[in-house]
Structures are given as structure tokens and as C-alpha cells.
Length: 335
Image 1 (spheres, rainbow, N blue to C red):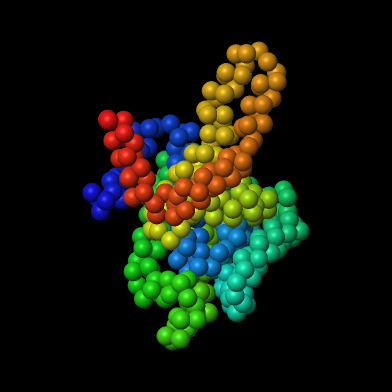
Image 2 (image 1 turned 45 degrees about the vertical axis):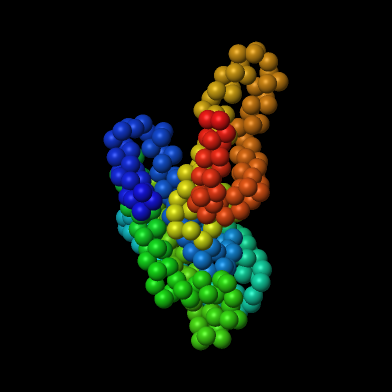
């Protein structure tokens, strides 16, 4: 049954817009699938190659600005940004990795934090190119969300399949050997510096493609949106941790969970908390609910703590553990 589960999920995702033709839920699913791409990319460099990165915002923003600038500066369709966004993100990542991968330990992670800030400041200060904090606004190609859904669904499938194929190739074995013991890998003749750059290049390219899609879908970007540390880089890490680091389908599961948690907090459990607060007629309770709606970061933190305590390998990594727990509870209930 497990072998066919990905195919079943793909079929369900394909028919989802036909079964649930609601723009709000379609929007949420588009965000989920976009995070599948970003989370899968982060999982390749961090989960499989062992190089923890906080730089997804830099690559995501580079891809988004590539798509936007193609339209505003060159009068070219922003959809070319899906390809060129990945290329420019990889171009940014490779010289960065060439320098930083010569160091070990936490230096790469710290350097990616700096890269985020450098790119955000470039986007803010270079107003003649990026329009600064005014941002870039383009006309969306489609009025309906349906084309965007199937485009990002294709991107998500391609990213998962690509990483799966990479991890089944010699490159994948090299990545894993570097993650487990870099010295041992180098003693076997594996060029760890080169293959870490390969992993980073693929991850950056996938993230840049997601950024290019975001520009086309949302129609507006500014530096604080696409180069955001907590909204992009930290979210990518949480998607991987919650779903399961070093698993093929972990980022996909993590994306669904994280977007759901974020939306539950943002809407106050889809308006039920605000409705309950207003029914009391108390301004104090209404204010509490308003603060709750803005506390999605707190929700993320609590979720990560619970996952680390009870599911250290993520939902996918500890799936057998979850099933054993459910069977035990079922047996206790029947007894």
C-alpha cells in the first residue's frame, strides 16, 4: 500500500480543484505546493548533504526579482522567470558555496544568514533596479487560480521526483557520505567541496524557480517579503523538520502541516474564536483573539518543540512510531 500512496496523493491533488472549486482553499493549496518545492530544495542541501542553510530567502528572492525585472526592465514575459529565476539563484549560490564550503561547522549556516541580509539590503537600496521598498508590481496572467494550481503542482512533482532521482544516483550516495563523515568520504576519493556545491546549486535552482512562480502568482514583491528570514528561510527549515529531514516526502507533509498551522492561527480557527469572543460582548476577549491571530510564529515554535520531543525524525521519519501509538490506543479503547 505504501508504494502506491504517492500515486494516490497525486491523483487526489490533480482532481482537488474539480472537487473543491473554492478560491480560498485553492489559494492555500497553491501555497502548500510552493512550499513543497522550497522544502524539498532545503532538504537536499541540509537533510541529505548535512549543510544546514538559512539562505533560502536569498535564492527565493533572487528568483522572484528575476521574474519581475524581466517584465519591468526588458518587457519579457515573467513566466520566463521560472527558468531564469532558477538559473540566477544557482549563479548566486555557486560562488558563495565555493567560498564558504572551504570552512566547516556552523560557518556555512552563519554565512547564509549574512547572504539573506546582503540580498535584502541590495533589494532595498538599489532603487534604480528594484524600485526599493516600493517593490515591483506586474499584471497577473490569469484571472483564475486554476492555471496557477496546476503549474505549481507540476513544479512540486518535478522537484520531488528530481530529488528522488538524484538521491538514487551516485551523487546521492556522495551527498550522504559527506553528511555522515566528510573525512571518511574524502579518504575514499570523494571531492566533498565539489559535491556540496552541486547540492547547493540544485537546491538554490529549485528555490529560485519557486520565487519566480511567486512573482507571477502574487503579482507584487518587495525586499521585506521575498528576502524575509522568518517568513521564507525559517519556514523552509520548519517544513523540513516537521515533515522529516532526510526523507523524500517529508517536506511535502511538512508543507501541508505548516501552512495549515499558519492559517489556523491567522484566521482564529477559521473565525470561530472571533465569533465566540464577539458573542460574549467583551472587548477584552476580542483583543485576546486578535493577538492570537497574529501569534502564528508562537504556534510554529510550539509545534517544533512537540515534534522534537515526540517525533525527532519528523512525521514521515517516525511514521511507524505514530502507527504503533495509534494501534496501542485503539487496543486500549477496545479493551
